Image (tube, rainbow, N blue to C red):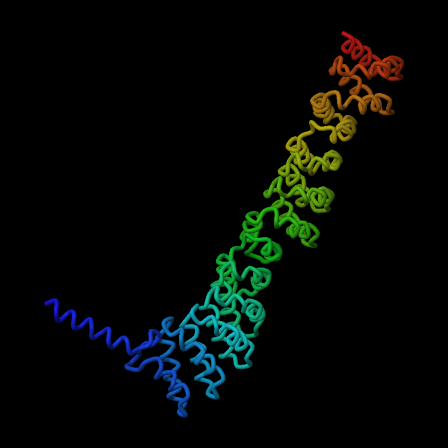
Length: 407
């Protein structure tokens, strides 16, 4: 039994030795024979040849140059079938990318359509075709646009430069589903995608999708979101502020823009701006004065107060705003507690407040200094002068403060 098998093996080896490793058969003909038929005078023969080579698939890599030459065939069907054949060979036909890129610009709709499709089947190997595929997103023919989107999606992250254009293409309802798939394949969580998704916020039905993507992008999306805070549509401004807040401390560069948004004429925007500043937290300390000013607005009083608490007012930068807050009856206890937490660093400003014109502020300044005890020794001269203050309550509070400091 072993000898017949050995003879068969040797026979196969002998036959194989006479064939090229790039030689494959389809319907009884070798690839070499099919390539030869590409030059046949009969267009039907040439058509059969390109179809056969395409059906061989990725194994027909060696015939790619011959198929590329066929793209100049005088017969339209042959040209189309040659493009389809190159697409069938797939990534192994990447040397055809320049020729297929040129074919995308062909006036013949079918040539252009199939060229786009073939480039998509080459995947990342067709990276150099991205610019022309981006242009194809604006083609008049829907099918060309659709195939361009799919081709870009097939390239994955290699096509990230197409993300802004794909973001614009989301406006086209007829190809929107394919655009969303392409964006997912490319990887939307990139800086390049931010502007595209900010624009998508304006498209009905896509706001939640765009919001999710922008939050995932995070800090790199903040510049685009800052621009969105200037949008003429209040809903867009409010949404941008909310997304910035959800990004959190990494969105600190948006603090000036959110601070300005506290004065937005739309309540929804100003509320979201205050909430956003609170979520950024201590890195939003420069917004403290503006938030205290916002407390005067009943519509955003509560969210501004919460924002101040989250930012934290136990720092020197907050002292002027806290002393200013002593003017308001419903904020005095809150501001006084924060000044006490800050401690001795607040003493110089409290001394100046004790010398001010507004009675309640002088009274509370004296009370806070007294509560600080010996840490407020430098205030003794000013407190002594306050014993002759025109306001009886200030005089009494100053007296008790001096006792507490000197005790």
